[in-house]
Amino acid sequence: YHRKIGNEMNLFSIQDVTGPGLPLYHPPGKTVLKELEDFVEDLNKDAGYDYVETPHVFKTDLWHRSGHYENYADDMFIFDVGDDEFGLKPMNCPGHAAIFQDQSWSYRDLPIRYAENGKVYRKEQRGELSGLSRVWAFTIDDGHLFIRPDQIEREVEEIMDMITDVLETFDLEYEMALATRPEKSVGSDEIWEHAEEQLENVLEKRNLDYELEEGDGAFYGPKIDFAFEDAIGRSWDGPTVQLDFNMPDRFDLSYVGEDNEEHEPVMIHRALYGSYERFFMMLIEHYEGRFPLWLAPEQVRVLPISDNNLGYAHQVANEFDEFRVEVDDRDSTLERKIRAAHDDRVPYQIIVGDNEQADGNISVRDRFEDQEYDVEIDEFKAHLEAERDEQRTEPDFLQD
Image 1 (cartoon, rainbow, N blue to C red):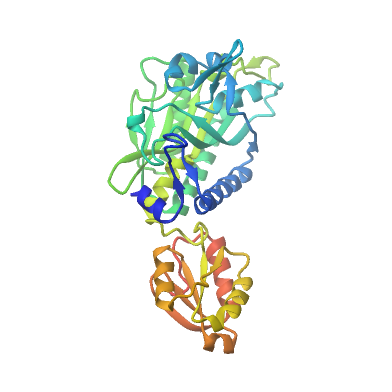
Image 2: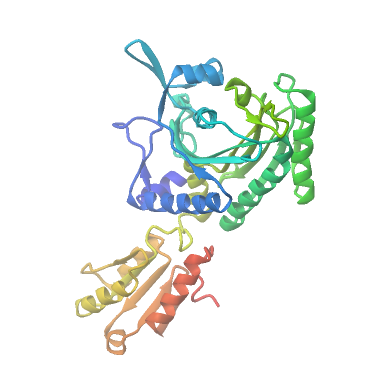
């Protein structure tokens, strides 16, 4: 379904000439993605994350050290350059661990929070590739935290606040699960019990409904996972919070404690969307392409009734230059222009004819096909600013 809408709205394409599972984002699609990036970057900055950047490719020495090579080599794109072997990164976390390792830290410095919109590559079987839901190249809104054990509960609470912001902003239905220690795992009984107890405390404190999935945690730590349901009832991974006792050990990560001894930090992996590709897919289906104003690739379309109104139409468009606005100046009937704007899922249409031009105002029509005449430009602009900045889920100028 999202592929059909994506094609209709010119959001993205996946072409034989560029390769399977490698989406190309067209200008309207990149506009939506940029809004999603800005949204999560604001959340990260408010929560004290520092942005880092890691390359798309590393020597496989890094993947041997992290353990990904022995577990994921078959799913990696690996190649030789001279005598060295390299791999496109399937995950961002080893790069972040390497950044943390490059400095000396005191217990007073923790928590350290890194964020990156990191592109990763995983060699899924060709038969499993599907639209944006399962691809070879995708971007994770990754965050990695390096913390003391006594900071687990507080940091997880803050991450849950961020995830709640995401879920409420997009009005998404989800299910949640707490996955605990599997039979094969790393880390002491004490650290596992402490970590699971703190994750459970966070969920219970918030009175959240969740499934307890005993033994389904990662070998390196317990986790809280969120899942979304798409338009045909399939479940997809969404936000996640994972504790990791393995990576700090493999990278010899440490900080100097209050006792002047070296201690190993706990690492947290977290993503607020999961991957941008899968989250974008969910939003396309969730909204059926009718994105909220703040996300819409085109927010306002100005429709002149006749050629006599073209100059005024462009003048009106200039009044809304802080929005994504287009003028439909085709030689066509108003009815066809309205139908085109509706089919293109534009939240608002501004209609200008001789009456509007004479009075210096506009008529406003929304995608629910409600229309109001004699609207002052400043009144409508003020409403659009509020609707955009408050990230409302529906165009509501005519819905009061």
